[in-house]
Length: 143
Ligand SMILES: C[S@@+](CC[C@H](N)C(=O)[O-])C[C@H]1O[C@@H](n2cnc3c(N)ncnc32)[C@H](O)[C@@H]1O
Image (cartoon, rainbow, N blue to C red; front, top):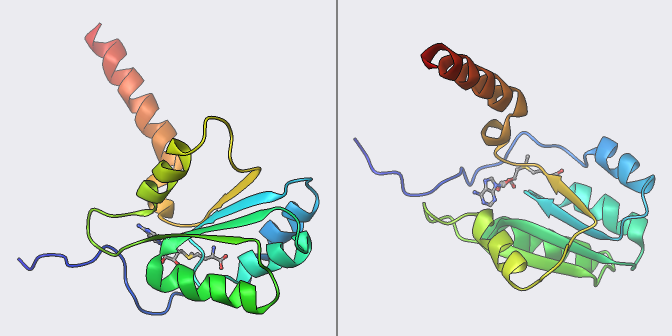
């Protein structure tokens, strides 16, 4: 068995352009402090930044080698209101630590809108619900 050296591929992902549904929906809200967890090349974040047009803040969470170029892309497009939250690719590191640092630095709500676009399998709500139902069935059988 070979040890896993990093937690996510560094190669290109099957993601092309912005998530238009997210940008369109965001446009219907009054939100101004936007966070995107998993930004890849920053296409969706750029769409949001264009909508905000200098208002609010855009918080980007991803591995350092992805979030830094994405933030640069937004800044080069004229958006100065970008905050980078980078984590390493070491196995036990993750965006969760970056989120924890943000929470630790605030006592109230931080973001108006959060687009979570990574690790889709780990927050699969349907699976969570079906596991919860199975647990309820197991518990009722033993009682
Ligand atoms: C589907 S892509 C994001 C696409 C982006 N939201 C967009 O609309 O263009 C998922 C991103 O999650 C990041 N990611 C996955 N696991 C991560 C982790 N543990 N820590 C930080 N970033 C992670 C990947 O590097 C990748 O850029």
